[in-house]
Length: 295
Image (cartoon, rainbow, N blue to C red; front, side, top):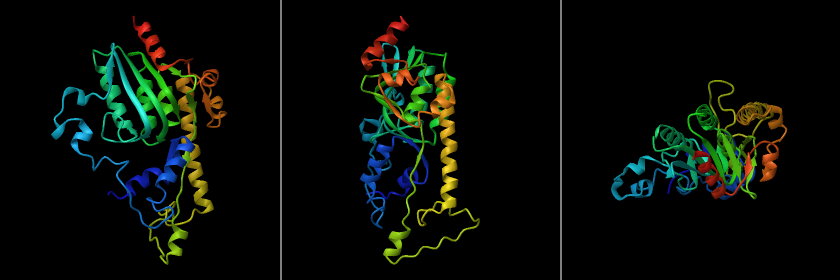
């Protein structure tokens, strides 16, 4: 069993670019383990890779690796297909989605490797994700956007690309979405968790001794003050403005047009109408369209 402090710092008291419904599901599933409804903070390693054995990480006993273990994408008819699945986080230390997560670190390495791979004629991000962490997202998006023109880059949605996943999708040259797939949720969410009242009920009093008036601001040992809320809200707005500007740049839209979506989600053709996607296509149809373009 693994304690959850590391996971808690990534989920709470930090800006997230994730579909609100997904954030609520994560919160509900992990609430008790994270101490939101109880004081004990214990749980499993479901989101962690520290306890995984080498076979689980690398696919071969004893950690023996082949060349394919250093390439986290499939090469299909000259196209590097990079999977973007599940919750997006800054680092997983793996090249492929692991335990319901995909790391920006793995995506970056896969993308840069595919750019330099002479066997790769085009790159596809195969996306189905509700989004995830802000940390690391926009740097990756800028890297992808900055490589436009070197090789065709497509985002082919297996179903959905929301929030941080949509930021990645928007960096590509071309986006396709299935009829029942979704785009959007261009916004930021911040979940603050306080244990103060629960601690008081348990007869526990915590005193924060800090240097600097704002040092303990946002601590989960204290309820959120009005001033702290305003400062956190300002951070959320700043990241949100960056998100709007990034999507606007990537998609050739005006920032206000992106802002006016108010983090809404758009099904299939609706996403094309507002400029969040280029075509409604099933994934296999989209892949064939890319191959035809390469001929």
